[in-house]
Image (cartoon, rainbow, N blue to C red):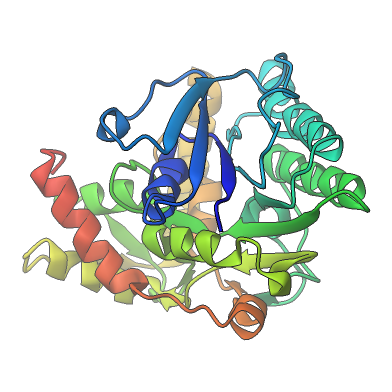
Length: 330
């Protein structure tokens, strides 16, 4: 079929990989939105079925842009760990109001399928050790903004268009300097410690596995009306660290120290951070993530969509670390 696909946040991390996947079908037309950042250089000489448009989702008229669109991938969003009034306003404007305006514009157009990339932050905590689509809830302003956006979309979609919501866990991959890059860098520089037994759980997802999932749900009736957690299998932190060490071609041994030492250090860092009024590389929040015992279940998405991770965390780490090295980041 010749579908016309709109991708908001097309110049972002997820956007560049999704567009790369979508371009595999030359019969589709792709309209990619960007705002603050420019068009990625890799796409500046792309084929004629990809068009870039600069759009402010909070303020611009969206009706003309959505004319004739069959599928919307809404990736645009804003993430922060800060909770100042200015940051809370940005979260509300970009994650909530922009999503509401886009949803309302879709209601008056002929959009068939709306795919929303939310975040695991919308369900990152639970009283149960295994978090699924039914028992998780947000605990941060960012997560709350994503959950509010989800609720708006579910309400607006009724009788208007099909909706699929995906909540990816911590994404990593080439072109991204996130938590995995920080971890790799610290391990390479011998500045990383494992607090506790190292059996805390990680919940990473390689970007190419996520982009494959995004393409697979497009106009698939099995995905209609669904909220999916998008996650790979959980692995013990010490296992992930060993894979990183192998990918670095290093014989480095990462030291493990008791968790109580970590609590003392994290408390000191938090006090210093408060005095300096800026974030530091270690905190009680980061320690809690390192001692994480919860895991995100991908049972629903794999059972309904029949999609599993083609690459996986270990292969994704190897590819990503090689890219870091080739790019001069290591």
